[in-house]
Structures are given as C-alpha cells and as structure tokens.
Length: 555
View 1 (spheres, one colour):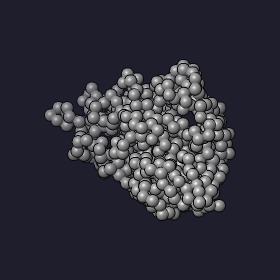
View 2 (view 1 turned 45 degrees about the vertical axis):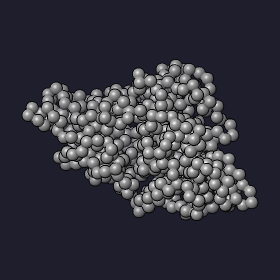
View 3 (view 1 turned 120 degrees about the vertical axis):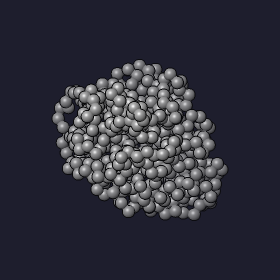
View 4 (view 1 turned 180 degrees about the vertical axis):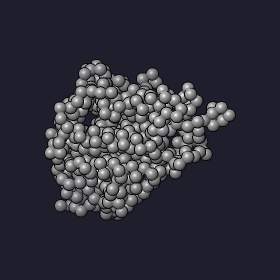
C-alpha cells in the first residue's frame, strides 16, 4: 500500500526547534487527540489530519506541550484504527502522508511535539502478511509471524487453549483449513508472534520511518502484551477479564517484553530532539509498571492505577505515594491521567456512586460530576511528573450514555461476555461552536450524534467566560508553567488536613483538595493562585466548598 511521499524527511534541526528544556517529557502535559472525533476538514462527518492541523493553534493556546494522535494508519476500521493494515500509510478517511507531514511541521512551528500511536501487539487481518499466511495454508513461513496452532479435540474442533478475548468470546478463530489463530482482541486483529525475528525487524523499520518523518515519540498500544508465556498455557479460569490488571496473566506483562523495548530504545536514541516512548501497560501493580520505564527502556507509562481511583482522599493519597515510590528507583517521571478513549469520561465517572469501574452507562449527577472533575484536574496538574489530557475534558464534557445501539461502533459491543462495549460514549466528536450541524466539528454532521446540550459546552461558548471549565484549564496550564515548583519532581510534602482532605506542599506551592461533600475550613497558605470552586478567606482561614481544589503560593 502506498501514498504520496512527503517533500523531505524532517531533519534534526526541525525537531530541535521545539526543544524548550532538557527532559521535556518529565513534566509535559500531553493532549490526546482522537482524530476521527476532533475536527473534520472536508465535511464527511469524520475527523481527519487536516482538521487536527487546523486546530493546532487552539492546543498551543490551551497550554499543552505535546499532542498524542490515536491511530490514523491504513485500516479496515474494525476497531477504530487499532487494526492496522499498513503501518507506513495514512488511511484515506484521515488524509495521506502529505497531510501527516504538514501536521508534524506545523506543530513544531507552534512549539508542539507530536506523539503517534503504535500498535505492535497485533495487525489487521487485512495486513499483507496475514493475507498471505491464510492463502499459503498450514506450514507457510508467514504463519510463523502470527500464532497459528492446531486445535484440540478429536478433529481439532476446540481452541488450542482457554484464553478469552478482551472483547469477549474465545481468543481464537478457526480458519477454513482447520488451524486456529490467536487474537487477544477482535478476530480482525491477529496477534503477532514476537518470537519471530521478522516481526522485530519490521517494527524497528516502522519506528525509523516515522522518526524520519519527524515525530517526537510513540505511544505503544498494549505494550504489556507482545510476549506470551512459553507454550501458551491454559489460564484455567473463566471470567478472565476480571483478572486483567489485577493478576498474573500468561499473555500480559511477561518479562520478555523488556528485551524488545531495550532494542527499540537503541533506535530511538540515534535521533536528536529527545524523542520518547510512552507505554500503555496494564499491570497488576504500579511496581510492575515501573519495570517498563527503567533507564534503558521506555520514558513514561500510563498510570492506570491512578485513573481507576475513586474521588476519595485516602485512596488518592495511597496511589500517589505508591506511584512516586515506584518511579523514584528507576528515575522515571510519574504520569497522571483521568480520561482517555477507552474509559468513561471522568466527569461522568465522578457523577456516579463509587465502585462502578471505568465504564459506566448512567449519566449520574451531572453537576456533582463536573464539580469533582474540575477539582480532580487541579489535583492532577499539581502532582509531580507528566499529565495527560483527553480531548474535550477541558470543556467538561460528559460521556454520552444514551447513544442508540444502531450507531455504536465499539467492537466489544457486538461480542458477548467481553468489555461492556460502551466506549463510543467518550468518542463523540467535540463541539467547537454553538451552532452548526455538528457544533463546528465539520460542515457535514458527525459520525456519532452529539447531544443538543453540547452547544453551551463548546469552545466558543466557554472562551473568555470567567469560571468556565475551559478557562480553568487554560489558567491551570499557564500557572503550571509559570510556577517553578510545579511540573517535574518525585515527591510531595504532605500537610496535616481534616479527614477527606488532601494537602501537600511543593516548595512555595501548596495544593489542597477537599474530596468530601461538605465545606471545610482550613488555614490559608498564602496567596490563592487558582481554585476549582469559590474559596472564601477571612482571618487567616479559608473555606473550601465541597469537592473543591485550591492552589496557593507562599512566595
């Protein structure tokens, strides 16, 4: 598969122009763009790279440091682009390589870095390797690049082992010649066999292709899944999804993945400009996550333990302490994240009772959810390390929980016993203006319907409005850059606080978060920099409303 070739590879000096300080990734705020839902440039209802490019000034003005782009590669779109048919081509629905090149160059001119998604655990079943493997039949050398196995049972009618797909049902599909292939996700996403040297060779080549294009790094999808336990042993358990991220699995977080990332790091370090790797690694503990960010491996790993923590001071402090303690020995920055394209937006999670997990189908108390979400954001941005923002959270967007079944596209929705399959709710295109067929997303509607209430949540409606969620984010990101004690670091100094309240100091900066449903009165800590709700001060004391975070400076 081929497309237009960019005018010329980006040279090291082009990438270096965005370098503001060394180790930028240690305190970077990275904004996740889900391209199909960010901005549509041609009116087909689907976001695209030119749409993203047109909105880069908005991201610069928001105050983020880098943009992470979810997959835009050539794909049949069985799983929203995470089923890649050609890793060196742009899917026509998003544009072409010239559009990718222009986006990267424009971002660098705006001092924004660009991180692209890489999907190394599996390909599309339309990838040339897999199509040839099917066509050539048993014994084909191409089948050795995937996990093809004979079945169990008298006639091979049973799967080779008892593994279950993350999307529900068995993790194996039988082909016409009788063999089975492994897919930890959808059947259209066959897993690569990383024991085969051709797979490693191919991905090192893919890395170089995009590094030569000028990207500043890669977010590695399913970074924990590349290596499977020897012999592909049975797990011996049903309801395997309940074990994910909580227990040892023969197909996740195997120690062999680290040799792969050490090889990748050697490739990355050949390039100037401080390029980085970010791991999506679901592990049983944050200590296991730290293994991915040792000095000769990856730079960052998503902190899913923090994302899944309830709005509760005690639980939050425990996760914060464990995270900082785990990252300190390996010298890696902690990362903090509240939402992404795979979970219910935190404005909706926090609107519901605790204990419901990260995929929720009920809207809950919208006012409560937004209040907590704003407070949680200020807490997150005050912590030492790097932070991630998912598109639309700066607008306070809730999940769309009432999408009609006929418009849903999440593959897990169509497979029984798997994930809930309601990820579409956090993927609805974001609103830019009060009016228009898709509130400024594009001129031809949107691929998922947007609620009418989003008009008043749009960028246009919130820009310049004191107290709006958008202006809160802009102010917080500006303060984070201007305050010398914010950003990078590996520790906080906890302060005494009432039950249900978190309080910590970082140099001359103090953050206090009230996670309770009642107002609390505490000592003032200097001059208020920013707060998520209205804080009143008198006689050296401050009254914090319920679910409110405040930033102070003692300078």
